[in-house]
Amino acid sequence: MNDLTELDEPIEIAQTMRDEIRRVSNATRARRLMVSRVMTTLCAVTLAVTAVPLALLLYQLIKRGAPELTWTFFTKVPETPSLIAPNATGGLSNAILGSIALNVYASILAIPIGVLVGVYLAESMNKFAATLRVIAQTMAGAPSILMGLFAFSFLLQDLHIGFSAIAGSFALAVLMLPVIIIATEIAVLNVPNTLREAGLALGAKPHKVSMRVVIPSALTGIVTGCILAISRAIGETAPVLLVIGGGYLNTWKPLSPVSALPLSIYENAKSEWPSQRAQVWGAALLLVIFVFILSLTARIWASRKQKVSN
Image (tube, rainbow, N blue to C red):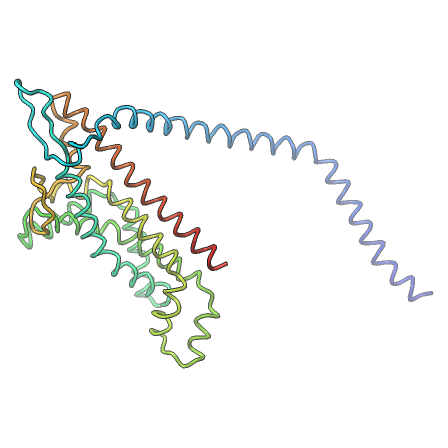
């Protein structure tokens, strides 16, 4: 009997605790429901406040920019309006080609370096890696105009390269680097340690494990970070404003001056001709389309790879 009594005591204690939890829960249920409704309402209001300006901006872009996206816009170079032909604005093919060239060159410069540095930061725990991590995080929050000033001072004044596509792509590459580094480091850190341990247990060297096991496993996050870095760089004006030179020629040569869509928006917005100011909306809409496509590609890539891995 004593043994049965001792067994019943924990059961009675547990039942008493459950009853007390139910009592406290019922006593605070009304307050918790009210707080939940208030917070849900605040979230809905915040979403509406955020979405309304964005919707108005997209509406204006589509309304004013869509009529500008004609065949001439994509195939002709700019023309200077005159009193005889005030609407002769031509197109922005030079800016479109220049933007593509700038971002291709910037990606070639930034992606290999950013991925390697990100892997190094994830795999190393020394003071040098900690210093690089702080530098990357600081660069990620630095104003983009500093990248343009750095490229202008280093390439144009010190190396005397001159206004060119390579100078602009260098500025964009410096801007892209911290995004790629941080994304790569996070992706590599999310790889399970068991994969590293398995590779090392089989006798592979650490750098072989990183190249053949860790990086393929983190490829989804790395590619997503690279695409997001490109989508950020494609619309930047400040880094390229000082170093690409502009011009009306369709060229993609690295050492030649080029134009870009952000630069064309900046220059045409200051024009006294209404036809050129109207063309700004077409260029802005095209930039938004580029960024949307790149962001959507990153999300689709990540979701499909995640489904395959699962």
